[in-house]
Amino acid sequence: MTDFEDIYNRYAPQIFRVCLGYTNDADQAKDLVQDTFVSVWKNLSGFRNQSHISTWIFRIATNNCLRAVKVAKRMPAAELPSNLADTFDESPEEKLSFLYKCIAELEETERVIISLELEGLPQAEIAEVVGLSNGNVRVKIYRIKEKLAQKFKANGQFK
Amino acid sequence: MDNLNDLKAIWHSAKTDSLPTSVEMEQIIKKFRNQKLRNKWLTIVVSCLISVLMIVVLFIVPFKLLVTYLGGGLIATSSVLLAATNIKSLKRFYQLDDYSNLDFLAFIEQTRQNQIFYYKKTMVIIMLLCSVGLLLYLYELTYQHLFWFISTYAAILVYLLIMWFIVRPRSFKKGTEKLNATRQRLEKISNQLK
Image (cartoon, chains in turn purple, cyan):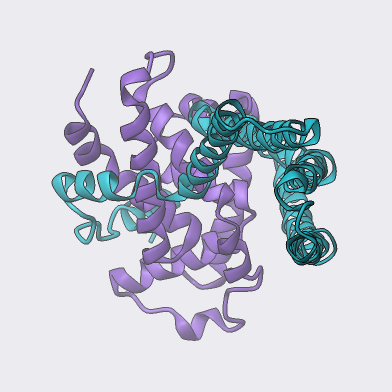
């Protein structure tokens, strides 16, 4: 069994990005990372390798995200400014901020799925985290990407 | 930007260096790991202590009236029930960590149902047992002194009336609002996974 320090160093940045993608709020994402690793710390000795440790950790993290009711209150559906073209900038920070705003417009489970996809998790593992079939997850990822592509195209991001 | 694969590059450009180091995280965890469940643990410990204390008193002190033993027994029983309910609830919290999102939503819904049951049944039973127990238990201690009898029972009656008709309905209303918000949110998220 890998020890906590190795697990934390390996997965904390990934979990942070996923939580940040979900919440679009760095402070809350940090709190969710903390909650996730509190659970990992408590349950690491009982982890039975029935699934990949990454699947287990991402399950905990995404469940914490879904449970975070305050996020939903803080993030109204229409978060994007109406005139996107005027607000876009080519700097990496602005690109990232725009991506988060696009993700914030998605439904909760879509936010989870696309965050895991962008993090590079295999689709089979995403299916295990979410609890859907591989086929279902594949279709959902395709649709989410289409939605994101439309937003980016509307903003002149894709050629 | 040519395609959506570039999104991964943007995604990974997020800065993560503000995260605590593993050593700092271990310190944070040690400090805060039980903070969220502290109230539940506190309730369990206090209820167990009251229950044990009451039983010890009933065995040690030679009370003359049966109602005193009956009252003490009811208070001890209500404390045990309160502890048991919270232990059961704690157990569910500790078991929740390896659920998929879909299973987790079902778990939250079950928790919501349990909370509704608690507000409508368990809480009423516990309060009823404790209230009746208290009224019976104090009878022997006060019935020989009219002043103490009246003032004690008046104070207890006021306290119980406040608990039954102000505190409990408020707590129920607050809990219900929270549970309804959870239900609406769960329905919304569950529909997304269909």
